[in-house]
Image 1 (tube, rainbow, N blue to C red):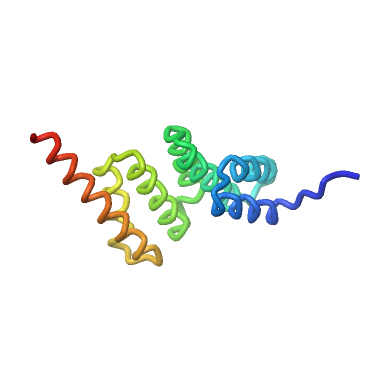
Image 2 (tube, rainbow, N blue to C red):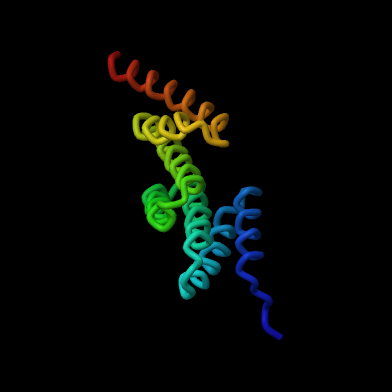
Length: 143
């Protein structure tokens, strides 16, 4: 008897594993689902969602360059979808803030903040942190 594999369900499973702190398992599920969506046309949004989970998982695993590639690939797939573009830009801001690259984080997050999206409160929080890091880094450099 074969293993049951249902892409939309398994995408949700990948999200679940990401949110409970199991990024490697999340990445594995998202990668399998992405491969299936890739073989069928019309599933770009779903495939971008998989790339997003894969990118977030890579951030947690400190694989920052790979995470950036996933986020940028997902952005390219959904550039016409304003809401998903904001989510992916937010995640890029998160990626840069995790690397203490304050200016890049602030650049991505400010754009989202100015659009007054549903991510407004999360963006504000990351902007405050990124600004504090930028100020701290400036103070360390000037000492």
